[in-house]
Length: 419
Image (cartoon, rainbow, N blue to C red; front, side, top):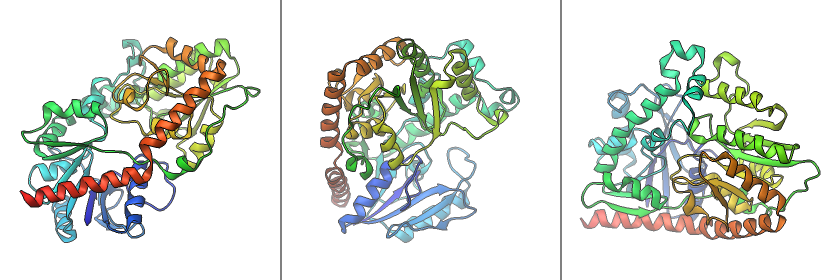
């Protein structure tokens, strides 16, 4: 069975700190089976289509180009179409609607059998883009340089995400087979699907480092309280500004508390080159007196994340929208007690009061209170940890995830052949 991925992730045998880590885990497990020949086409910093294999996985990198009506120049489109024809896969698996891959099949450029995977939905991110920021905070999130370079402004980025929504709708409406990671995603795309669309459940693979990690044990409090939040980049809907307000409340009860924010927070950039929202976060940290309570290590590898999780008392998941949260899945596999924003698919991943504790995305006071509960109540923290780990291991076992994926591939290929 030959499968071609069109994805937003360059596969590599080296440990990765970038987004798309579930694709790294999934690809490795698929290849290990021996009955799947896997190819991948993605977008990267190259001048022309470049072959860059990952072990036995054949891989091509397509140059990043300016889009017009959702697509890159025809020279790039024709290059991808020709490449797909040469590979001649049994199935093209399109990972996500965030990029233009789905438009290539929706508009008839790619005529092979396709399976469309729903990952993030940019138009839903646009709907909660500001993450509860007040008007004053939105204004404060515009840097001086962004006044003159409108495309960098927070409001311009939101409009860009909203605009892409029409392409997402075009992509979803045109595909016969679609797989979704959650009921929330299924409900969101349901009004957009064409007649006769087959929507299937998909599962996300968790990297082996989290399965191989020792189960979380509550760290000592002698060095203070350790909190952790994972946020790929400083974007308002990730809710980090809410976590900072919660941290200020926690600090009133536990002065020796530290919040580690994992992600690309432009630590090494000069002030003038940072985004306005990031500068707003830095001002908020100073106003709340949290300068000594924040750690910004940047993006971390899976091994580094496991190490950080093991010394964390509570992990906070603060995003205002998620079709699926790999960060929550990973923390549950390790068993880190989590406080989670009630948004998107998050309530599907963990049961409130048993496998995690939930708060409304803007309610920083309840977020702080739940953090304090898990810090102060050893029995509660250990119970949440144990039940979260049990659920995570049952749901995310690599063998079951990959077997499910292969079954989906076979079903779609067989039904295309029969039609």
